Length: 97
Image (tube, rainbow, N blue to C red; front, side):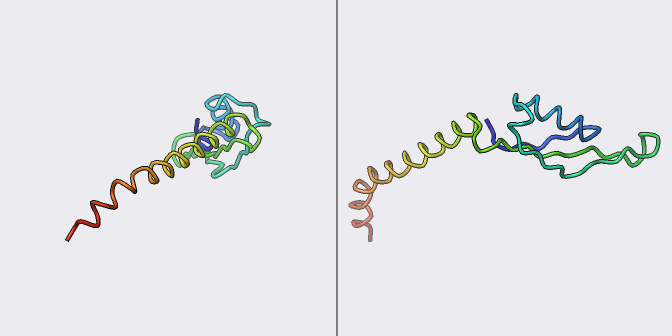
């Protein structure tokens, strides 16, 4: 699951509702930043622009903790693969003219 998403809607409340539903979380579990409040335009037709909201999971949220654990494991696995491959590659590198 992503830790951060951007959502649009006709209004700020509409966009917030869509974002919370998309993430499957409550409002208390999200950091919400209004990027653009949008414009209703002339009679709802000309000049309309949607509201844009950025959502971020709060630090203590379980989904965020899982993502951080996965990223840590991935980083460690890359570090270990470098240790494994380096002894195999170095002799080949040293034989190159």
